[in-house]
Image 1 (cartoon, one colour):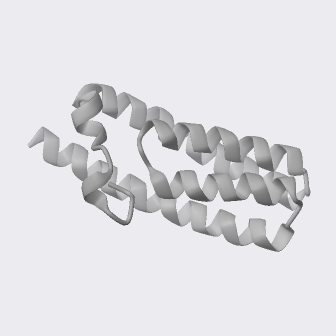
Image 2 (image 1 turned 90 degrees about the vertical axis):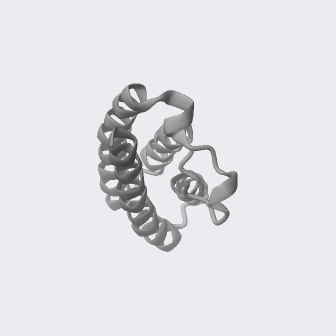
Length: 116
């Protein structure tokens, strides 16, 4: 779904079913948006521990829904926080937000197709 070779990525709808996936997606959206906001706030304060924690939580939430790009960027953000790479972390957060937004569009479209 969210990997360069989409044919190899599991489809969450087929794994979880529409109703469960809708609940997982709702929880993901709430957690992801909160963790993205926390990461940005922590980065502005240079609270590297909080940045890394938010990135790890976001990674776990995205992993459940097989969102590889969010997972990749979240892992990179955690690593940037651990090494205190401010400029890298800023760029990663931007890419993470973009990946999150793309994933929501893709997942919403899949849910709508499943309901039809």
